[in-house]
Image (cartoon, rainbow, N blue to C red; front, top):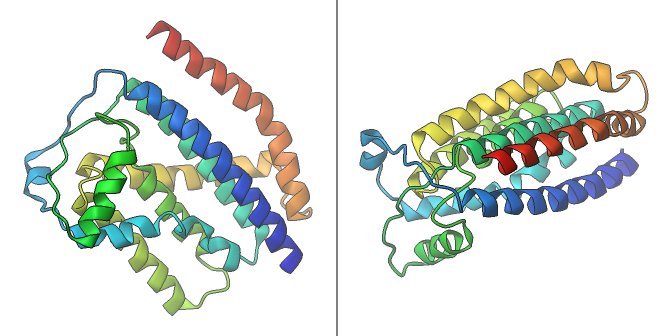
Length: 237
């Protein structure tokens, strides 16, 4: 178990590094496109609550939770596949429907300073919003942690944290309701689809690490095809 955990920690760090590069590249391009504002009346009634920045930033470490909870590493492979599916489809949507909306004025309290920093490093005037990957990742993490090493109380805590992170995206004005709803739908759809695809991409009866390598080898050509499609969308847009 310890050896598996060390292996998957390394894999997770590599995935995060690659994801960060692609996310920034897509966001940079999408931010130069004409943005659409889908803010609704309900969105405008949701107040800015700066203290919610703390659960919001929790999502940056939340994805590493399964490394200490999962006992079935094939399930972790499925989570990685879910994240890949969710991201690739989201990146296409970011380019097709770039979202931007105005941000509120901030004060000088500690939560507001942190929120100001987050606003500052975000894409301007806006990009990579619909769906909210902040929300998508959170619910994939909840799904992968179910039925593993935690008891019912532990799973309830993770569920409540997922709900808190989801609402925080609205209360810190990083996302609108549509982003959040689609983000949740993206998570559950990617998880279900990954469950079906994993059976064809890897042998669930072999060692999980070997299964991950098998899955990766089969995904490489798909990734190149996807990259060609994205570049075509950008070129002919």
